[in-house]
Image (cartoon, rainbow, N blue to C red; front, side, top):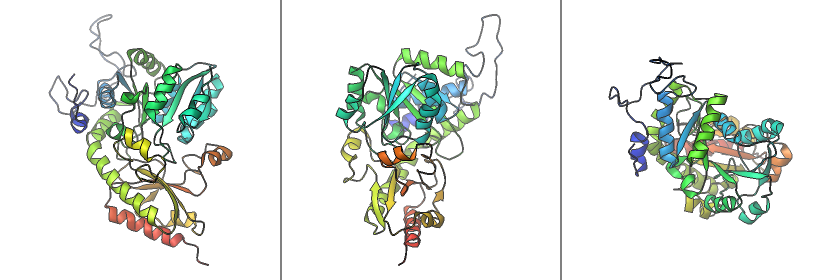
Length: 387
């Protein structure tokens, strides 16, 4: 299999990009549950679509190549991918997680895997000294988001990986916000990369999917067994859609980031905005770390309005930008983390890590930037409390 060093070429031609039998330039949708066998033990490479499907296999080969990993795995959602990865651990194991992570990641550890004796601890992975002090004998892995959801904090993936590996830990990185187009955790030292492919990789808000990539044959064998045994696999049609979405990832991300940089600059200067969280701004605390490991600051940002602005009116006033869950689609989306994406995290923990009730998260789309800025401007203006 030929690998392409140029990312924009690899997005289109990487992995299994054509159908070898017919020459079709798009891998067909193999919409089948099972496969005819030529005799006992005589299969043509496939036996049952939970175990293997040519369309899903093409996607898995593609994401493995893009992330620079040994093997890729496609799941029915980002949380299904996370659940499969966490199933690598056993009762008595502990996982360290970044101080602010997606609420679903917290929930699955706090409410599901805790039932099986797998525990977690929130760790300040931004501070390597603090992180290393949190490593106790029962800690077997660290799960990082960088930039983290929703405060966009940056963790030095290489530094944390070096510490973790010295202590025998696996390093898991959720690369949803950056995608392999902007950041590649495995060359930085990560053992496993996970994605909610629903977001930027799909890119069109029309599918739900998850991906995982591992850096070794040993982990590949273990995760393949878990994927087949638990069965949360991605369907052929969604695999096809995701391959199609990935082909335009580069051109979409370039536009997303251009718009996000303009939006962050606009918000940082606005009289009604108290704080902007975006690692692409030079005065952001994560700027230096993010710059050395990522292409740029990405397309996600969060901000807080000043006290004399009504956040409820702001959400009611946006017009072009839609109030909705999720992120990474062509359209700009805004959400309220404390009551939406991170509502499953207890209030005391949210406050401790800095997820305030006034925090607004913005997924900057690919609309004309002037229209995005105009909508932000009018919504903020309407939300000002007149005295």
